[in-house]
Length: 372
Image 1 (spheres, rainbow, N blue to C red):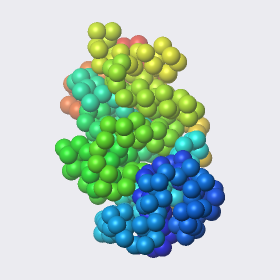
Image 2: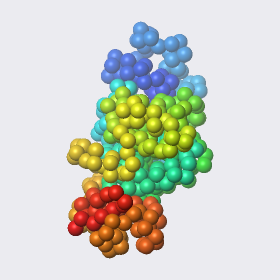
Image 3: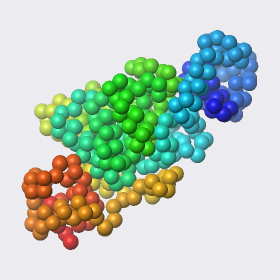
Image 4: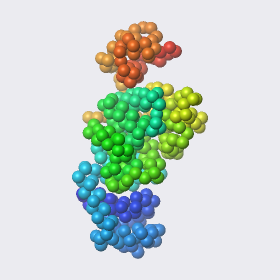
């Protein structure tokens, strides 16, 4: 590992992953390397505990568990091709840098250019209804197909569905972990995490590689999910869902908050209804989000030009042309089109969105009608 990332890793270990203490030290000494060269007497006035001072002293003597742990983490990052990004790195996510308590460093595994894509966060319950699962897949597929990275927390339920749907749409997805990258949590998503990396997505965490899952880490993780994104979509969430924390953080970070409504009898959607009452934007279709953020996309310049996201133009795919032919010049419902064309629901929703964005069809009472 190069000196600069190694010094950052060592300092993050010593300050016990404390953003506030890291900030004080960098403000005082200018860089991780200079902070580590300073003596305990220079650290003490900054409010460092005896434990922190002991860790610094042990590292400087290259003794004790902290030194071994730092070496172990450095070796793991090198072996697993994990990059460290500091806030002054060109690849550090631009929107995340704007938030008040931005993580001072990120551990990243996968395609770093994904972090510069325009992102939409999708969150929700770990126990979604069938309708919630379908909505999560539909929104993620459509948004990903329109050049937006889908960002979520790799949790069971809505998170995992959103990541998987983005991959199936050949789109980009960013997974923010509440653990270290050596501890994929939940274990059921180890394969999903591997697929995200294999398909040009990225896994990120502010936690040291061997950090185990701890309850209080996940709310801390949520500020990164919202901070990376232009807005947060809450697909389905109960009143006690952690997704509401993410939505609240998004509002505090001046991000958009969207929520999908459901039946008043659906307890898994009461959190969404509460958000709508508090001012979140009600959305029923992916185009509602695309229309709202369309003017914001020009600020993003992905690092990889070959993967630059593009919004739909008037040229439409062969599959979309088949939908037009099936629709004809009469209003038809979604179910009628699906039955005639034998499409899967998610596929048809994606194609209809393509046509709507191209200005070829419009949503009307009773279904869809062709415009040109």
